[in-house]
Amino acid sequence: MGPPAPADADPSCPSQDFAQFLRYFTDLADDRVRMRYTTDPLEYETPAYGAASDGGPAATEVQREAGPARLRRLRGATLRATPVITPLAEGGQQVRLGDDAQAEQYTFARRYGCWMLTRVARPQG
Image (cartoon, rainbow, N blue to C red):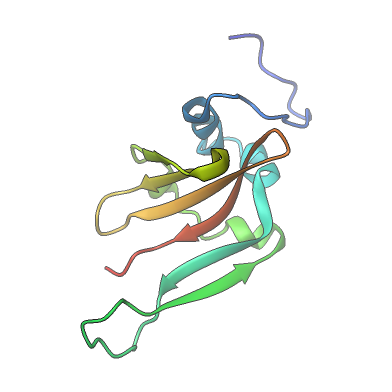
């Protein structure tokens, strides 16, 4: 590994290996990779609380967060969890982070020669 980039350096795609990219993306000490490689606005899919449960698919709500606020819901405990990575079509990746109760699914699309976080889903729990 080479010398660290200067603090004001604009991070280019930190790695063409997704597992390594994800390590940079989830680095809690440095949010530059998260800021650059997260779509704006970012979609959050969360359970719709108070929705009637009739045994069918769980109701969800999708909200869009823009600007720096789009990262405020990314929880440190989740980002430190061991990832389960599933490849998607066209170079995308889906990542499950966290234990069963607090798990989140992060969807990354392959764009601009790197990956972009496009959606965060929190399953019904």
